[in-house]
Image 1: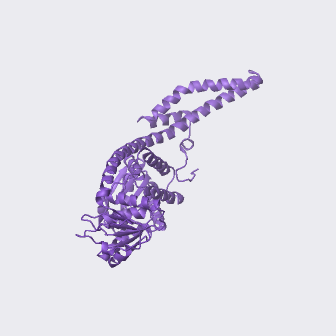
Image 2: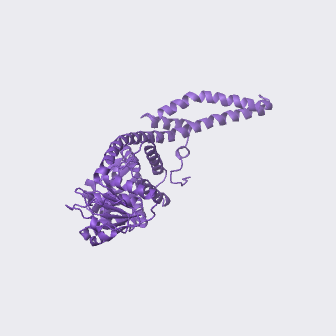
Image 3: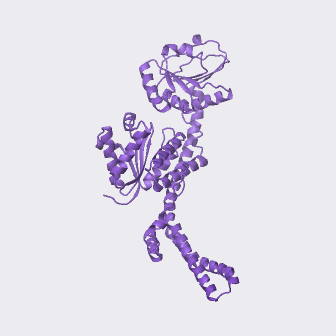
Length: 443
């Protein structure tokens, strides 16, 4: 049993857990999340604060606990019971991080370094929502608020110091980004895209389109495969994907301006004989090799092939790798700064309290001296300034030394000894409230 309080993170993500298992772990409603967190807090005496982040790509728990090891085992045990999963299996696949590792992991998640698409911005909103739910229902307080506060600061610094969210790094993401630029440039309001094919490229293009708010008409020769993919995507994007029969392809390409093709067909599935004249321009993206679309040779249809997009993707990938390296440096620095900051939360109130004692003693003696007639009352303000300067000079070196102690291993016993010497109550010292980026005041 470990009895040292600290941060804990338990992660089931796309990196270590199959989607079927992530679906089994996930909670469908905020009410079910609240019930789960309430069960954990009420039955684990070590667990002090907890947040649950549940998305299609990850199921993660962030906690502050008196005993990270015991709390980890308890959480996995409860999860196994309520989801009817073998506990040993959960223990085996879970990524568990404690204290500094937990902080570093959360900062990576918040900065989108742990996402399927590195640099995506959706995770920030999901994390804020998870924190808000936990805070509003009393499941987390100052310790996790400190952590989330720093996580958002870290994510902002990663965005500001790198271009990690700006450059698309796959052919599919480059295609979607180009399509969106063309839509905005041509002031096309109806954001609908035809996607043909449900292989990796088709699914990735669909996810990028959905993230930008496009509605998708999904086609595939095997309709059941298309239905399976649409069900998965609609669970996250609120029924924005509609499956159409593959036989409607020849009519749909003449009804909507945006088309993405990514099938494994050995020949062109869209041929010039299928094309009709329209009153609008069309933008087609052929993501297949061999190609899915016969060259239309028409001025009203703009066709982009894999070759057109690959060079941009390759250049962006080089830049993304450089930015990712820089981003991890930022996360590392913020992790160290977080723990330094935690230490100063105990030091700064200590210094403030000692200075208050010095000021109170000086003013009390000054007041007594005036009453006794030792000092004329008209000199009282000037003497107060002299006394203030004197105790500032006297406390200058001790203040520097105390702040230096905060970075050392022996900080806690030194600070506790000073509290005992000056008879400073912990409750006065350690209550340090502040705001998180989610605008809720804790005091």
